[in-house]
Image 1: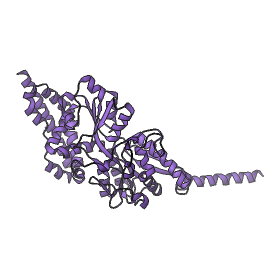
Image 2 (image 1 turned 135 degrees about the horizontal axis):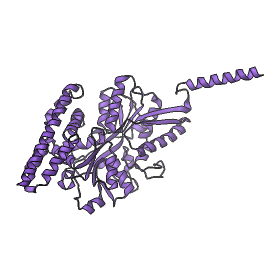
Image 3 (image 1 turned 90 degrees about the vertical axis):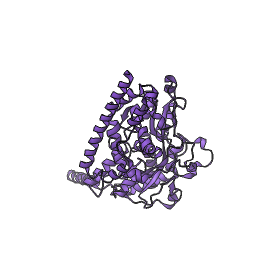
Image 4 (image 1 turned 45 degrees about the vertical axis):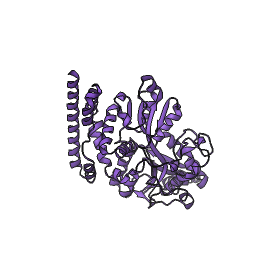
Length: 454
């Protein structure tokens, strides 16, 4: 009898070991989904919570959702994906790229890093193919707009009133000398949404005026932060008065703090609305689960998470997300009950944003901002402080020289063709930019101080 029990125990252990070794496709209760995403914790929590419930109802199985932390925003995630495919070309080990705008998805498609997936017709037919010049549905079904995003400014109303700071309604206004030290921004090299704001400014104002705006704004920035959400938290805390931000971060703080305390707004005529996308990555280890996740997010049930109030049917349960849906049906009837009482499909695009142009010079513009503004901010701020100490009639020519771009727009496009490929050449140019910027700012600082003495 003891021998029989021993044999049964050994057999049971063997079976358990065999079951543990089975691939995830055979262990249905242990399905997994791995996502790369710059979305803040509220989006991650609500999407995970709702998808688990949806997946259980549809398949009878549980799913474990893992959000890979790449140590930064969308730009850092894109770099991590690129590096992973260099190491293992067939798969980066992740299933989904979720969020980060439009341009990164266009680039990942061009690199062959995305996997086509056509949504079921009952979902696909609800989504407009294009909105305001952007593909909502990629022609090859490589990616989809999962939400619509706008870009604007978050203002701390109480700080502005207390310090008698100006009310800002344009990007250009963030370069006002009175705002010195009271502006916050993420680092566009680390965040795709912050980069989009800077590119919007360049395209809306034109290259020369755009750079003048960015440089003066950069001089007013107290510190460039690592994530896109951090600046809005600084505004909410009253550490700064203004921050540039994607709508979701601004509206979340407005919802938390109240409109009487903080105000998010989109500069009229000089911003855009574009898709914030989702895609399946090539070689996704959990392809069928990834397809279900994309289907869920684009369905009315998934889109409800963006716009419906807390506790409403199919709405969020813990965090109000405050995003714009990609489904026109959500904008019918009374919009006042929605978190985002705005119909993006009825808006007119104030200018034609050129996404191909933006993508072609993305890395060049990042490094121009880095070498000409962020990494030389000590020299930048010292020069600006000296210039704005002068009477207005004595500083106009200095401000003009202060805001000149490092290169022409034509050169930026030319450099974009080799910038990521020829690292030696681009590195040499970056070093020259930094030296030129420091030299210019130091000279302007000395000239401004000399004028003040006279």
